[in-house]
Image 1 (cartoon, helix red, strand yellow):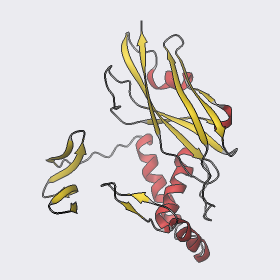
Image 2 (cartoon, one colour):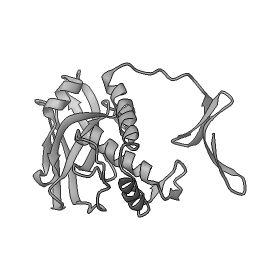
Image 3 (cartoon, rainbow, N blue to C red):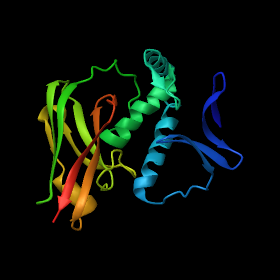
Length: 231
């Protein structure tokens, strides 16, 4: 169990004595700990396999390459479960960037630490969702970017009206588009995931991923939710 100390205990996270502390919408929640079920589906096993592959490759890179990753890590800031800033180590950044490359960009592992990222300037994100077709198109405006930045998307399950935070797990689709293209047609991927939804009023929620395909640098994800009504 992790506990953040102040004048009193102000936050906790983790397992202890058959119970677990988690963060909920209204604050911290204490609930009974259940035994998790490990899914045998490919979509669930792939991230675990990728983590095993990437972390084991840390032992295969040279000493000079490790020094490069540690030097890069020293210039970065990350945040723990309590939102407290810390400086990561080289192994953490090696895994972070390479998991992005393996899981999202679908490219090979990067052994040498990349130069610090120059993040793109993207504005005017819009998700257009029409039931006829259906037609699902994501658009944006590329103010400035290097040529190897790309946009990908993960679909959440269809949401009920009124939901402000998407429920369920987001599942990544295969299609990506370069940032310079300024649009990504997701109609076929939507049909593959949801088919033709039964008549009703829903919300379509997506997680937008912006990644540099040569380095694994990734911008903070963007969540978009729009109405999606079917006849």
